[in-house]
Picture (cartoon, rainbow, N blue to C red):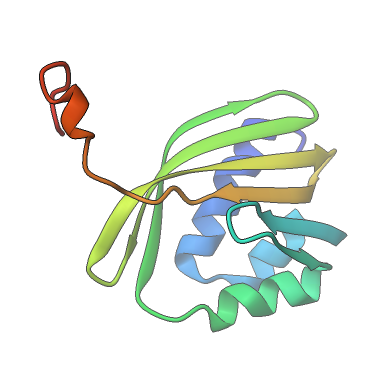
Amino acid sequence: MSDPTALATTYFETLERRDWAALSACLDTGVVYEMPQSRERIRGREKFLQFNQEYPGDWHLSPRLVVADSANAVVRFDWTLDDEAGVAVTFLGLDGDRIVSVTDFWPDTSAPSASRVHLVEPW
């Protein structure tokens, strides 16, 4: 798979299906996963697969935008976890047919500031 957009899309599709063998095929053995908000890092394909296999709850991922070049992909996606939902962004580092890094930004939701109520339209 030399199409970086297809690789990024396949990554999300295999996560959603919980197809661990197909997900493994997308990942470099030394893949590095990071979540900057919690300052967590996971090194290696096996640990990353285990992290996803053990993640609690009924979670789902639905990509809405994929932008990619030969070395990187950025995916904006909707997520649900049990009764929660939101939007997040993933940055993928690519090396040919493999994902070598994954950085997930899981934003905390908050209500609009009262000081901006006259400017914003909640959605």
